[in-house]
Image 1 (spheres, rainbow, N blue to C red):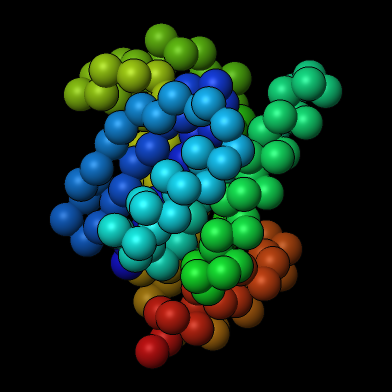
Image 2: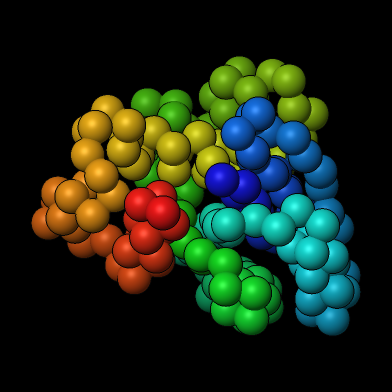
Length: 169
C-alpha cells in the first residue's frame, strides 16, 4: 500500500510510504491553490497512492480557513482519482507516536533525527501514527471482522470501510 501524507501549511511537508518504508520526503512551498492542484496531481500521477493522510486544522480562524481551502483541493483530487482520504488529528498522532499529545517540535525532532524539516517530520509522524493506530496485523482478523471490532470502539467512517475492502482483496 502506498500512503501519501501531507502536513499542510505555508510550507507543506510531504512523505510517501510504500512497503519499503518512507521512499519520498520533501518540503513544498505553498504559493497558490492553482499550483497546489497542479503539484498534487503530479504527485498522485507519479506515485499512485492508495491513501492520502492530511491533518484537520484546529487553531485560529485564519489558519483553519486557509488550510480548509488547501484540504478541499487535496480531497477533490482524491475523489477524482478514487483515493482513500483520511484526516488525522495532530495531537492524536503525537500521543500515539511520541507518547504525549502536546509534544513539542523538539520532541518530534528527537524522534525523527534523520529528517531536516519539521514539516517532513510531521508528515512521517502521520504515517507512523496511522500504522500504529490500526494494529490490524495484531488482531489477526480479516478486514471485515477488524472493521466490525474497531468500528464499535473508534467510530470509523466510510474511508476506513473502503480501506478494508482493499485489504480483503
